[in-house]
Length: 272
Image (cartoon, rainbow, N blue to C red; front, side, top):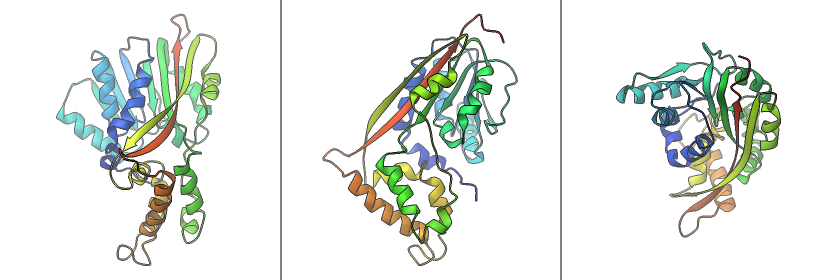
């Protein structure tokens, strides 16, 4: 079963998920007329691109039909005529014209061996343009380690063994992959300390993203909590482990979240 996305669940932490995107764009030094957002999700960040560069034509691309439907619906409520959305897989996406700004935020970690894609994506950038990416890099954190450990035990292992596992690299690796004649690359890492509210907030956070493939691989047949509902059983066990790893404090639960960024600017003299 191909995992699906729940846009409402994903957007429940929209503020925390937006900040890295804003930090990424702050390092972009170009005046784009054509922008493509690869892995646009529900389009909330694509709208920020249009807000910053209102004269640009902006296209959001995503492989999730659910996310594209949400993006188009929200865009219809605030039509601009310059923002559009395309249902496509970035692995096979081809630019119809040179792109002044190519952006990919929190998407490439879902693409196995995505380093090999970077030269093709960078080639779509016009001279004087930029390729900006950010990926989560917390896959060795307790949240992901506990997910893997619990999913590796029965009765879950038989169902979760083939679930997607996101992965990314450090800033130095992206800097090396994007560097070359005619390119100026800025790469860095940041660990955010998200202060989350409510009960089991780390479970709510990760169940909408990194834990999604495992949870959707587990059967939830029968009555909730019954013997056939492995998903609920897993969530209870996982939630208990997460509460121990991320204990709530007087003002909320702190979730340290490491992210990697890279912005590659192409020189004006670069050959198309």
